[in-house]
Image (cartoon, rainbow, N blue to C red; front, side):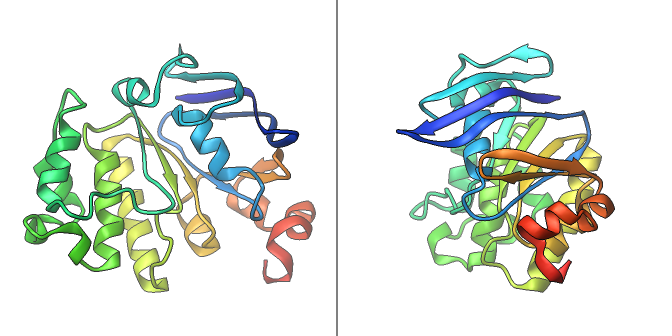
Length: 231
């Protein structure tokens, strides 16, 4: 559903990504983990068209989108959320979702708000709501238009353990019903191991390994590079 081939991104002499290739089949929830600085957010930026000085090829549903802008990739069926909430703090929740709907052919605003429990707070100013609600608004913005592919950069960041698990279970149910393909960056290993079908591990800008949650949990090289004794 989404593929990246030989993706490289440099910051001067430093390579944040080095010849990374990744392929996520339709309907899969793929986890993307690794130590800080491994290149996870950089990979999300490259796939979504938000990275300069990047090389390689990106395709969505077999269509080469390498030369398309982030906005054009959105129209092509790619949605994404951000590590730091990318909401309009001074707008109501309903207003900003309506604005997001202008960029897609199917502005399913009410459907998205209902799915994420936002109908009761639709007319509240986003910046005046709780952080948990703001995280859901950020996810809602990515889901407008029913994207075929969803790139999520730490959607549970800053949430309590209970909030993280509740969000992850709801997300898994939603993407399966909507038949969305997901690539998710997440530091909360309980979330990753509970909802992901497969996991790709990055280390120093390269793919260290890939496998099922059980394979990753017990991989000696992953434990050494990232998970530690807690695995």
